[in-house]
Length: 452
Image (cartoon, rainbow, N blue to C red; front, top):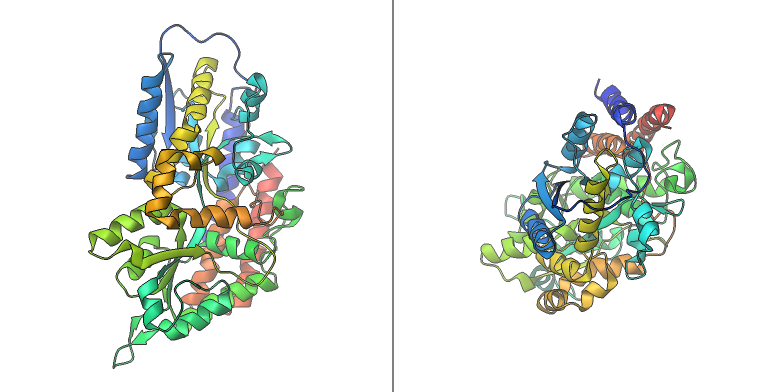
């Protein structure tokens, strides 16, 4: 039953979007009305990031009199997407919505959007200052469909003091999976009864981290060059590199070198902050919150450092993570225009610099790093630049451009099932990954049968 739902839900959601969408995708034309036009924006940023986003909205509303943006929290990205789908055809849809990278293909297929490219072309908006890899992720066939907003990447967080105590150089963190094992063997501490008092690393079971490690190894997730050169039709993540990753994960947990945090990112980070693990992998989006939490429990945040995410040996790099802002064509043209004006404002170097400083997400504008908030952030916490430098050092290949796949969330969920079967159920890594790839291919095929 679970696997049937995983295969069916993305298809049903797409069908609802297509069937209920009543707008067109032409750019709004005409004059802006005289009074302030209400513009609703749905988002998925819990506090403190939500408070930072509200500040951007407040600044925008105070900067002009044509539009009044109302920001509404809709829960997580999946919650927000589901609420959008259930609201299509009614008046209760926003002019703009923030959705994760995983929603890119399904939003394009839905026909429910006005591509950002339409507005860009209409006013010859200059994109030359934007992070190139941010534009690459959301550009398909020379069309930028949504505006990258909160950008993130996975990084290694580690305890410099623990490294020193273990005789490791804190300025030389591990870069490969094998090095993580070697470091963990030295960092591991056990009590007299044999129980672990400090793990080498705490690991959150994350399909996104698996995707990133696969990209670091230079390998693809699906055919069609990860859906970038043609619609993906089957999963190929059960390749040799994929098996290497899940096998490494299993052996690290089985031998007590790694703490298995399951799907709990907070638990994985707490193990590091409390000294129960010397390393963890996390999103750069957690950086500001991690610094605050470490400070709150009385530890020195400078005891903790960051480094690029370790992965298999290869010639690849990471893919962009995070979310973007989409404009919906089911709202009146003046509201769509207001959404575009807000998106431009939120993407300004000044706003992006403050957003970066407030949250740890890196800005979508190159010049934002020269703005005072960003300068102060990296002077105070150099760790802020790790993810940025990692992204820029990654080669531009299909593997690092991100997976373009309509049912990506469902495929990720099936992949997590495979990890759970291996880590908690004792399943064989290669067999479970192959079964996940087979089911993922079924999910993709069913999605493609209904997609335009």
